Image (cartoon, rainbow, N blue to C red; front, top):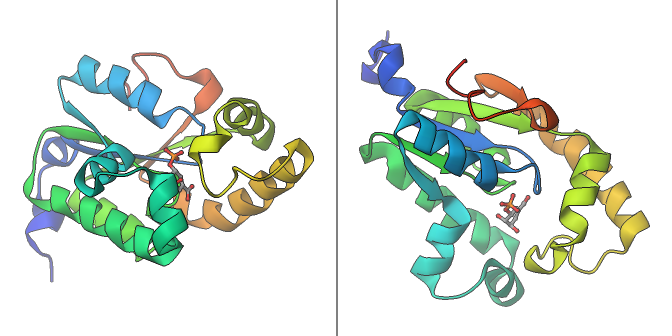
Amino acid sequence: MTNDTDNAPLEELRDKIFLIGFMGVGKTYWGKIWARQLDLDFYDLDEIIETAQGRSIASIFEKEGEAYFRNLETAALQNFGEKKNYLVACGGGVACFNDNIHWMNKNGTSVYLSASPQLILNRVLKEKIKRPLISKLNETELLVYIEQKLTEREPFYKQAKHRLTADRVDMYSLSKL
Ligand code: S3P
């Protein structure tokens, strides 16, 4: 048996894009460019949560813990069920908890922006203070953490409908899928 979403035309699902991938791969940067290029509304899931909560992700993690944050991001993601014409840059963990990758694939089009551990390391080193999972790690520990987490998360990321490689994308990459 099929449901309404299974029968939705492909063009409709392409109007609902979830950009996923590890911290630092450029989801927000490219998401904004691709949304503009495809005439979609751009959203950043972390930003939605911070605005709704009136505090930073780091503070939510610190005061309430990770499980609480994961529930907030799942609720924020699934709010997109009713919306159309958007591209959402998802926080690095969203696709890997609460069966969210299946929800994304049922309700829209997921795109995995992938990168090597070394590229991720270079990108996040400067901004790690904003990211509670890595803020206390030194460079060596950080590379080990990235390699381990990436191995753990890739089985989820790889369930995305499309994959793009972060150091080989340009403003037209999404429209060419
Ligand atoms: C997280 C990634 C972050 C943010 C939070 C947790 C993760 O988003 O949601 O710090 O679990 O990978 P970015 O991928 O936008 O940095």
